[in-house]
Image (cartoon, rainbow, N blue to C red; front, side, top):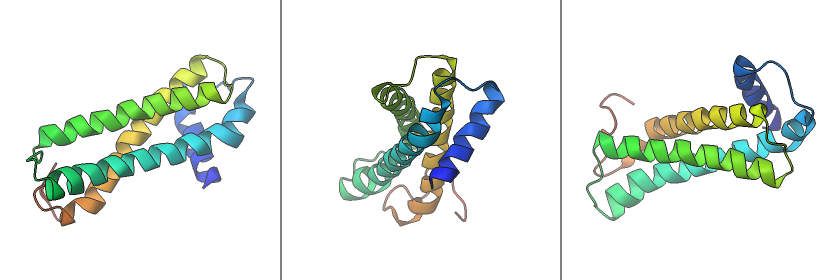
Length: 136
């Protein structure tokens, strides 16, 4: 999976910035994989919480598309936070590359959230049609 995350982040960041920083080796060996797994886990936990804790077990009535969009925004915001905090704690220099990495991870977190929503919403008691109705 390290190759998957390295390829994903390298390709998406290269859309914004083609020049790699001096500490690119740190990103390639440690950060892409660590941040990728962390983002995937956080997105999965938020989807499980939205569909199965808040809308099945607790019956809070948070099944509207607005609630789903707010949870998506939370996942995206946590993606930015994870990329920033994990990169800085592993010694990455503050640079434009780190900024683009945070933006890309925000998008990746939102995409993971959308994918997990499509895959896991059907077994929710109250939110099986949130955010959209369809065969998914």
